[in-house]
Each structure stands twice: as C-alpha cells, then as structure tokens.
Length: 546
Image 1 (tube, helix red, strand yellow):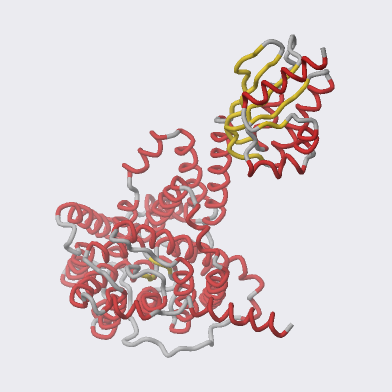
Image 2 (cartoon, one colour; image 1 turned 180 degrees about the horizontal axis):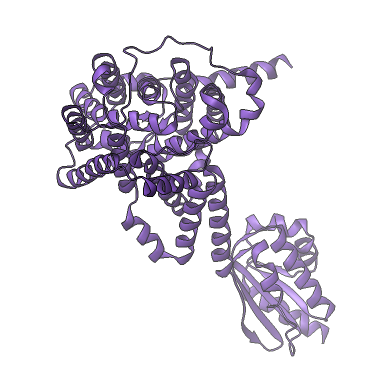
C-alpha cells in the first residue's frame, strides 16, 4: 500500500510542477526585452480606459477594475500558460458581475471570485482544459455577439444619465432609462459618449496603432473641466493598492454563492483558453500555449485579486491581440502592462478621478461594436443555415438569459446538428445481385442516430435466398448499431435467408461479438475478409442446400 501511495504522491507532485513557471519562460524573456517592454507599454495605454470602464460597469467601481488589471495581469503573466496573454477585467465578466453585485453585495462577489479561483486551480490539476477547445466556432461567435450586445445595452443608462435599478435585468434597466430620458431628456452624456465612441471607431480604422480610446477620454475630460458642462465623474481613486485582506470573505454565504463561482470560473476558462488559441494563431512560429497552466495562472489571479479589492478577471482577447500586434514575444510584455498600469495608478490617480463616466461608456460602446465582426457572422450564415441558427440562439440566450446556459445550449444544439449531418452521411443500399444472392453495402457510421432510419432499409429481399452485407466502409459501430445489425440478421434468418458478413474491420469486431452476431456467423463460416469470398461462400451454401 505504501508503494501505491508513494507513486500517487509522486504523480501529484509531477503534475503540480508542470503547472509552475519553467526555465524556458525566463529564457524567452531575455530574447527581445526592448520589444516586449514597448509592447507592454502599448497595451497598458490601451488597457487603462477599458479597466476603468469595466470596473464601473460591473458595479464594483473604477478602482476595482484598475486593481484587477494590475494584480491579475501580473500574476497571470508569471504563472499563465501563454507567453502572449494579457489578463484583466473583461466585458464578459462585467456582464456576470453586475447582477451579482446587486444580489450579494461587493463582499459576496469577492468571495465568489476566490471560490472561482479555487475551482480553476482544481480544473488545471485535472487536465480538463483541453475540452474547452471542442466548443464549436458558431457557439463562440454567438457568445461574443451576445456579450457585445450586453456591453452596449449596459451603457445606455450611463449615457442617458438615468441610472437603472441594479436588481433589474440589463434589458429591463435600459428600457427604464430610455423611458425616463424621454420624459426629461439630458443630452450631455449622450453627446460625450457618442463623440468618444465615434472618434475611437474612426480613429481605429484610420490609424489602428494610435490609442484613440485614451486620447478621446483625455479630450472629453479636458472639455468637461474647462467648460460649464457638468457630467458625473469616476470619483476619487486610491493612490496605492490596498493592503491585502481577507476581511471581505463571507464564509456563511459560500453555499449560496456556489453557482456564481462556477459561472465566474466557467467564463474565465472559456475566455482565457479561446484567447490563448487566438494568440497562438496570430503569432505563428510554432507558438503553443499550455491550457492547464493557463487555468492555473487564471486561478491564482482570481484567488489573489480580491485580496487587494480587485474583481474577477480572465484573459482579454482584445488586449492580447494588441500585445501580439505590438511585437510581444514573451511574458515580459504582459507583466510590463501590469506594471505600467500600477505606475499610472500611483502617479495619475487625481487626474483619472475627473474622467466623465459617459466618456468611459463611449469607449465601451466602441469596444462592443468592434467585437461584432459582421464579416465572420455573415460567413457562418452562408456556410450553413444550421451554423447561423446555432450562432443566433447562443447570442439571444447570452443577452436574455445566462452566459453558461447559453454556451451549454449552444453546444447542445451544435451537437444535435453535427449528429444529424453525420447520420445523413450513413448509407445502406442494395448494390447488386448475383443469382439468388442480394448484396447490401453499409457506408458511414452505424450508430444510435441512424438505427431507426436504417431499420426500414433492410426489407425482406424477395426472390433472393442469401444476403451479403459489405461492411468495409463502415467507419464506426456503437452498441445501437451492433444491435440493429443483429436484429436485421435475425429477421432475415427467420425468413429463411442465409446472411454473410464481408470486410468487418478489426476495431468493429468487439461490438459485434458483444451482441452475439460475430461468433454465431463465424461458427458457420459466414464471416469473410472481403466481398468475393462472401459471394463464393454464399453460392456454395445455396448449392449444398439445393
């Protein structure tokens, strides 16, 4: 027993070591440090308004967003599984957190974040990360479109200057704000947000390397400060990071926070692993992330960020893409992004406090619009009507219901669609006859989704005394397919037909043996390596019977 325990302990230790930083990480940092430092500074400039905006939109405040970008960004850069990934607050997390803040308060959300961190670390240790890659592209695009729509709708109350009730769903809150605005219109916030969003979008199209989101925020702040225009501002930010503390933990609320923690962990895993995959493709050159290490790094980020007052975090696809385009090649770039934001938090907190909330709303509106890649959405619709439906269903459920439920249902619909397509490719047809022998060819997978349809294909071939099933083109057989074949053979035999099998693959023999078909036919010489042998044996059997 001690040997077994020691072996298990050694395996666990090796698995844990595989999740820790490696010597190769340090070597990659030394290759192009200047390029990585420049990329990190570039991402920090882009990330500042997004971090502030997502913090405000989540209900936890701008300081929480900035703290998250610093703490989670640094930890994930060191312990994550990608050399290129940039982590921090994201739009998807904002969508999840806003109702959580209303339901459980800030302490409850931070407690759920710590729980999510633990869940992610457990998932990393179990190696489950590789299954996230199986999520179909239409589901991912539909999910992204739904998130973009929610981010846009969330900004409507901010732009209109009429806050919605935090307990309301995002659509209901936006409608309430619109009704209030029509009764007493205030155009200041609308104009600021529209100007910021418009300039950001046009500037990104004209000069994508220039941080127009930051420049427009600076411009809007200056205009508000130097003119009689009044608009709600972010408010005071702490000049330093808060000292780490566990005072926020609400241990008694852990059972009620379980689903919230699972939701946070699920969104973090999905966003982070998809972002890492995108980064690998963008970089090329054999770049490949470690999915289990990535979940481990994100788990640590979500475990420690709340200790400093931060919010749940994940990898950010938009900031990661900027990082790759800026020439990043190692983790130094992502760490520099976090360090750069820390410097800004220390040096410019009094200035940041005067940023109008409507300007941040404009940045998030522009972000939401840029997330909607209409060309990609149209492509999926053209490729397959089913893919278009899957994408639309996922987007609607994301907007109107629940993010994880949207993904689960989207994957379920995609799975049903895939099964339908695979089943349609299965063929079972009579391909010829020779004398009293009918030949059927089975082509494609013989599995549960085709059994009902194929059962009506094998009707009693009148005028024939023997039947040969050509099985060489069968790609797979499950238990339902094996039972179908057994029932068909028994039905034909009860009608007095001699049944032969030809070309049964070795990997299919187990299923057919389990249902008793193969041993019985083989015992009477009716299992053959190929069709000519089966036809010859059938003729001999019919001749002997005559």
